[in-house]
Length: 249
Ligand SMILES: [Zn+2]
Image 1: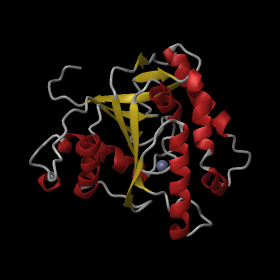
Image 2 (image 1 turned 90 degrees about the horizontal axis):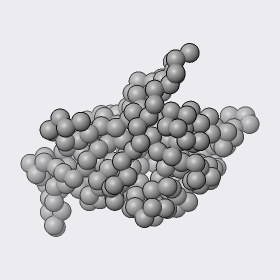
Image 3 (image 1 turned 45 degrees about the vertical axis):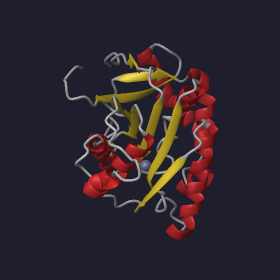
C-alpha cells in the first residue's frame, strides 16, 4: 500500500467562517471537532443548512421530521460553539444545482461576510467505490459559484437593498472529507465535542437502523487516518479551493 500523501496545515488566520451544507448531520460526520477548535480560538462560525433533512428518517413523514431534525441540528451546533443555524428550506433529496440555489447561498454569504466558507465533499465518491449523494454534489458546486456571485454587484442585484453590499472577501472554500483533501487541522483536543455534536442527532441516527452504530468509533476511524497524514493523533481533512482570480496558489 502507498504511503498516504501528507496534508498541509490549514490556515487559521481568519476570523469568520460560514459552513453551508445540504443536510443536518453533514457537518457532524467529520467537521464538528474542527469547528469546536475554531470557536474555542474565539472565531465566529455560522451554519447554513440548505435543506432541513426532512426526507432523512424512513419512519417519519417530512412534516413531522423537519422540526425534529432542525432541533437536533441547533443543539449539535450549540455544542461546538455555533449560536446560529439558518435553514434555507430547499427540498431534501431532490436538490438541483442551478441559479436558484446559487442565489440563496449568495444571499447568506453577503449577510454573513465570511473569510472562509466550508462545505461538504462534492466529488463523485468519498474515495472508495461508494457514491456520494446527489444533494451533496449539487450544494458543493453551488457554494463555489455562489461565493463568486456574492462578490459581483450585478449578479442577484435585487438582494442589494437595505444596506446589504456585495461580499468578495471569501479567501478560500474548504470541502470537508474530500477524497482529494489537501489540508488538515488537528482535532485531538476537541474530538470529544465533535462526538457529542454527532450524538445530538439521536433521532436521525436511530432512524438509520445501523445496528451497533458507535459515533465515536466511526469518527475516530477517519480522524486517525487524517491525523496520520498531518502528523498528529486526530485531524479533520479538507480540500482547499482558493477563491481569488490571480492564480496566486
Ligand atoms: Zn448529507
